[in-house]
Image 1 (cartoon, rainbow, N blue to C red):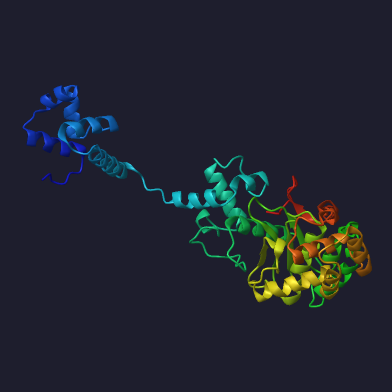
Image 2 (cartoon, helix red, strand yellow):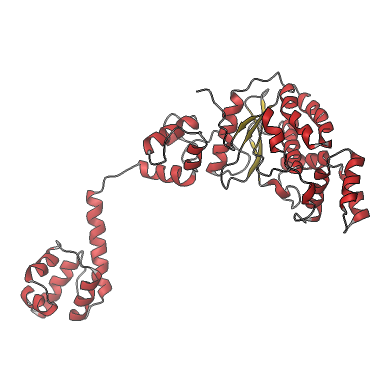
Length: 376
């Protein structure tokens, strides 16, 4: 029975001894020079797949045995000479989890390329307000500073930090307990026409609410956030990733309800993938309250229910337009609520006009080619 071996050379040496062969005999049998056999035995020459098959045939040993020993020996040698790199795991998380290339492109971090590893790490530390790269929040061991309301991906946390950065540089009047409700009242009259949305940033600013639009990062699926810089400085951030009038008003009113209720003071209310919000259940009490307020703001739900009962399953364009005129809103809001209630997101799209170009001119905006300046 063969003894355990640490190298293919040790195995070969034992096999030669068991046969009573010299290295010269083996060299003749397998067609190589004697010096090469000596190097294999001494561990100075690797056993590749071809040689493993040849030796396996000669000694009736599985070729895989030689390759396994060679692999184990190579790994042991590599561990001896390899230098530990404690930063490798950090880089795996930062460069693997964060959309670094997109953050560079967006001007969020100052680097020419993600290949400038040290520059990128320093810039990321500055972006996340960390003293060193090891303290960046998206790392598993780092202390959490954002405290979002749900498990957030690194890309979502980065987006949230950008909203916070921009909001910190904004000036706004004093916010009071009645400010958010005042904003809702003033915004209600704007639902009648898409063009009226241009007034949203000014109204929110007048009410002491910082409003920021930041284009979403790839695959982040963020729609909006409510956070507080302190107990008197609320912030609403939106991504406008769905450029439609119904989505804009629903998300905005949703975040406003978070402000009204004081949600997000201790943990930012990050709202992700809200396209069918409130239609499937399972949301938290905070999200349920905000969803109900948003839906009621877009269309009074009792009137919508009556409309659906009268017209279901056929909703003609003239009926949608007439109903929207009756309740004083844009037909796109009716279309959006019908989609939510019927689950038919492929219908009524002609009424869902784009709105981003109307809202962004008067807003603090980061994205779509624009980089909002941030004070260092």
